[in-house]
Length: 106
Image (cartoon, rainbow, N blue to C red; front, side):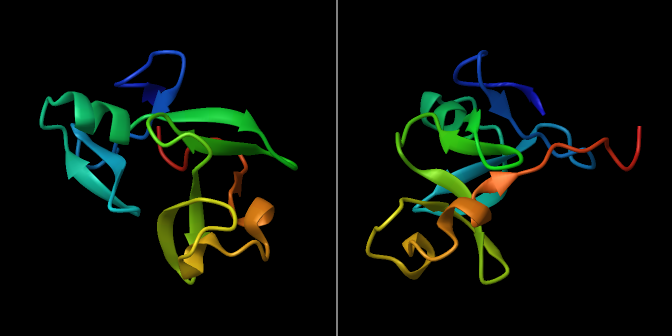
């Protein structure tokens, strides 16, 4: 976690093994991409922490009300109650709440 590329009060998730690559959303799919220096990339790769149940929820900087969600062994930008399968309300809060832990490697 590093200060947000699009807003330093939020966070960006930079790859440890591939510096300069970040988790970003594009067409609701969350993936690792190299920073292309655009404002869109910076916003897509910035996540704001909000309280969750036993952890934090990571809300997209540029898609208010949408959260980083693991669903069906994939990671998506999900909107509660939206029309996509990954937007389902079933387990939404649990699937969008992340626990902060110490890193596996320094």
